[in-house]
Length: 455
Image (tube, rainbow, N blue to C red):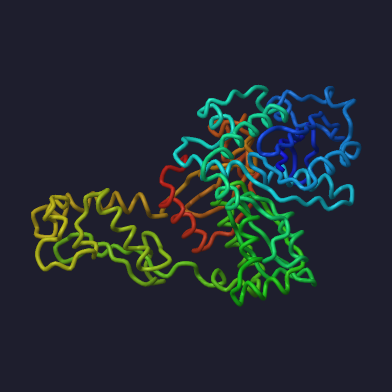
């Protein structure tokens, strides 16, 4: 039996959201055998953007039943069922939290139709509920209302369950609440972990931080810790008592915070980031003929690197990419050891600096352009990214080539109208160091299309 579920909430801080509407359809694999759809009085204010999105107002829920009045009915209705939802981690978390507030531990096996649809329809252009069901010809009405989205999810599930390989797909995606690999005392910590981007602090019985990590999906990363069999994983499993979280909304801020917090707290199980996170750098060296060569070398504290890398192999991968983009000579950047012309000259991708056919003046112009793009000298810029919710965006401030900090603004606040002074007033400060600089440069290499505003 499957309980197809959708929940609408008030919005607000993580694990403080209230339920405003819930819809459940009990499906036996062939037909719907029972259902429950109702508005719910959340006993707290509905966020304005949520009211605009769902159309559910404070007036509509004023006389609706409170959660404790329908809790017994929901528990009985879903007993023995697998909970199915589009992004189950959200709906299941909200439902479990509502029961937790009543002093009851609500546990069900779960199945996420986002994960399921990615396996069933790998070539779909989008796996969001609205776009996916439309592409499959499923009518969807009352979008962003619990009963409308639950019905659409039900129809989507019917299509998937009728596929030949449905049993295999479902067995792959179903998540058992009583994962036998996880110690029973750790299960509640896993269930409370948010499936969002940020950093997490693992603490022992003395409330001492013993490990700090970051992830784009904290809950998934915590599960890896709890199911790991390495010496470090087993030690963490024995010592961990509580976990704290700091959501960031995007990976860059999580990386910067992780780097800073590990250096501040120096947890005993964080060995890698206690040391410098990079070991190699890209250095310009002018040869006797006036050509600027680029070399990946071990870090030299007496010389400024253009950019830094975790390893020589990472540096070489970077050079392979920029060689083609900037039409550089493979011999001049150490990727070719030929005595005469480089291999790129043979396929007409090098203009001949290696054999003197291109002047050093012309060749160096492209090298200097690369250096300007990837160096961190004289940089004043804002890096714009995702916020902690769809209603906001984040800003990381780089000033005088130093990471200053980050903050968040509502989508209604245009970044072009915000002064640097006002931004600095709201800034959550970050410590600038060589590791922070490396993190920024690595991130910009990985995501060159990130929105940047220079000032």
